[in-house]
Structure formats: structure tokens, C-alpha cells
Length: 237
Length: 237
DNA sequence: TAGGATACCTACTCATGAGTATGATCGAGG
DNA sequence: CCTCGATCATACTCATGAGTAGGTATCCTA
Image (cartoon, rainbow over all chains, first blue to last red; front, top):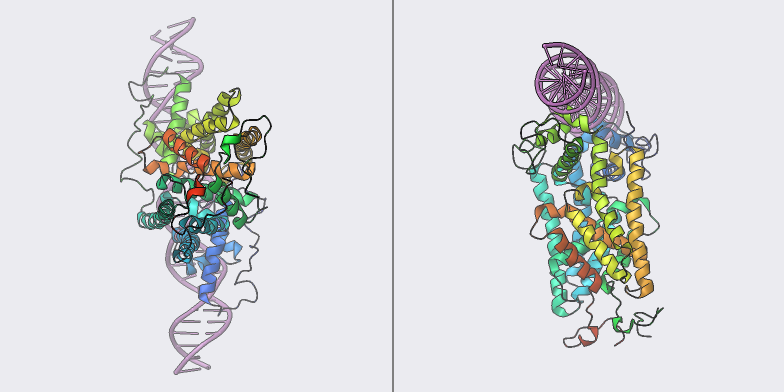
């Protein structure tokens, strides 16, 4: 009746920009893992554009210029496909934590580094899958698994915040609420980034880190008296 | 096959806590508007618990202890139902802007007031509908309408930020990015609030406002010298 | 070069859920 | 009492999409 499936008319048919391992001379003996990854990638892009429930496996297959049973040849079912997309995205964030773990910098800086990678991951094609993979769409077992992964990241951020408060590189605050605020702001990138790609994920993340760090209240608050002051917060010259 | 529909077994059947205008002696001549609102409320709660696509109109009807055609007697279709839920939530935020418009306080304070109401709205039963009402689930016309409402709120926040920068109550910043960060953190409440109701929406919003205002960098940065900490970018003392 | 394994497709099944046709019931006005 | 309109239920239609059965073409190996 009314046209669901937002997007340009005729969408869902055109092959994705990134080359499909299937196109190009039907090489059968292509590495299975490569094709499997291509399926996951195509699924992530489709979910990102049309949402999980509005994406059929036929859509995903069409993107790869194959048919549905081929997709099922590489993944067991749709929910596992979503799960794989989720894991692919989360792995980037976990990598960021690992990368930072043995860095010998103040926790505040380590946190910023993680947040930057976090933001990049959110702006990637897997961002949608990470934030919109609702537990309601998944079996209880996978829901638990996803929650555990999310919690791990949440705890990692809280830990860095606590350490930062300890070593003086972060202002005293409630680590839990602060972690929620930070993660929320970054997670939200996955919602609007689709439409406005004028900045890269890294640039957005960097901008956010600056905002988080400085806060909204002017630093040189005591000076704000005159009428049209604009000499606020001048970093030492 | 595998049990979708997360939640306690047998869920979707039990009537909702808030009384249904239908229960209680079948009063026919009850105000139509009251029943219509009850439908929207029940839908919002169902969407919030199970997601839009995992909620059937039979589910919603069961919550109200009526049947599906009765629901259709009050709303034209499912997508309009989602739309109404969205509008119900957004209206609270618009009201916050109106309430603050003629206040004669610094823009920074007006912004904080709006953010607090914003957070409360997100923690309400309509929070989910506001942030998860994907344009992909709606017809192009409604999608446009929703985007317009969202944009109005976004622009309102940006305006307050700009005014705050002007009047000195907010530190200089990029209004667009800052609005994204603030709205993102608050929107995210709708995702996790379900599971942890130890704080009210207002309390959460207040906590967030405090975090946003102060920022992560310690205010008394000049004093952090003791244990080998590198005092980064010290604000002028 | 037969035989198996791999990779893929055509053509289905089947459950779900949105939306509806049709009729029953009840209150109110005449 | 009788009818009309508002309200609600029973019992459907019908499109969609997940998942599968079974067959086919290609490659590898012996």
C-alpha cells in the first residue's frame, strides 16, 4: 500500500560500491572466509540503510549479486548475521582498549584515545549494528552475549574514568553516569552520521572529546561581567 | 523455532498496569479521546518493551483487553500509531522550549532547564518511540514530518548554545557538534533506562547537566603537579 | 576420467502479522 | 418497542519473508 523501504526508488537492487567477491569472473575457489566477510559487510550496510527488519536476506543477496541460498551457505540465519555485524564493530572498540592498556599516559589521555576509536567505530558501517542490535530481535542466548560485550566496554570506560580521577587527569565525577553520558553521545553518532558525512568519524570523535573535556561552563568564569565579552577561556598565549 | 520476543514467558498477555478504559464495566459512552490516548499509551509501552517490529497489534490489543479491530477503530494503522507515540513524546520537549523562551535568565541556564525536561521525556514511556522511530519504518511523508520535528528541537538547542556563547554563560564551542553531543547523551537514556530505574529521569538529566557543564578536565588544573603528572594545556591561572 | 566435494541456483514451504468483511451488541431517541 | 448508530468481536484475506529441498555446474583428486 504505502511505500515502506525508504531510500531512492529502485534501491536494494543496485550492487554495493565495495566489490563483491562473486562478481568478476565467478572465481569459485575464492577464499571462503573472504566471501563470508563480504556477506557480513553487505549485511551491515543494508541494516545501516534500511534497518534490520526492513532488510530481507534477498536484499542482502542482491547486493552481492547472488541469491538467498548462497547467503545461507555462509551464515546460518539472519539473527546470527546481525550478531556477527555487532561483533565486527565491537571488536574495534575492544582493540582500542587493548592498544591503550599498556600506554604509560594519564588515564584522561588514555580515555580520550579510546573515545576517538569508539567514535570512529560508530561512524563505520558497523555503527548501526552496534547500537541498534536490540536484544528483542535476538534469541536470549545471543542477547546475553551482546549484553556482556557491551558491559565489558562500559566497565572499561568507567575504569578509565576512575583511574583518571585518581591520578588527577579527570575531574571528580560519578564514573557510572559519566560513562553513560560519554558513550551515549558517541553511540548517537551511528544515528545521524549516515546523512551528513562532511566530517570523518575521527574528526567527530575529536570534536566530542574537546567538548567533553572542557565542559560548557566557561573556564574563566570569574571574569564574565562586562556586557559583550568574548575573551573567554584564552589558553595561555 | 528459537524463542523471539524476549521477556518473561507468557508476556504480552498480561494487561498493563495502568488501567484500561475498557476494563471496568464496559462503559460504552466513555470519552473517545480517552480511549484513543490509552491505545497510544499502550502502544508506546509495548514498543518500549519489545520494539516496533516485534509488537503486533494483537499484542497491543491484548494489553487493553480488547481485540485488534477495536484498536483499528481508534487508529488507522500501525505506522500512524508509532507516529502518534513519537509526537506525544516530542510535545514534552517542545513544551520545555516554550516554557523557557521568555525566561530572563542566561542562555546557559535556559539550556540546562531544557535539557532536564529533555531527559525526563527520554525516561518516559515515549522515550523509545522518540529515538527508535526510524524513518525506514515510516512512509516518506511521516518520515519527513518526524525529521522536521527532530530538526526543530536540534535547532532550538543550537540556538540556546549560540546565545549562551554570546552572553558568556557557555564556553565557546561549535554549536552544532555540541548539540549533537548533548542530545546524543540524553537520547541514549531511552536505551538503557528500561533496565535500571534506580534514578528518575530528572535525576539522570541533572547528573548529565552537571557533567556537561563542568567537563572532564579538572577545573583546578594548576594544582595537579604532585606525582609526576604532566599538566596539560593549563588554563591560565 | 570417474567420483566426490564445493558452491550455487530454482522453486518451493510455512508462519506471521497487517488489515478487513461482516455481523453481534448495546445505548439512546422516537 | 423499534430503529439507528456507535462500538466491538469473530473469522477471515493476503503479502511478506525466513528458511529449505533438491538439483546443477564446476573443480579437485585419484
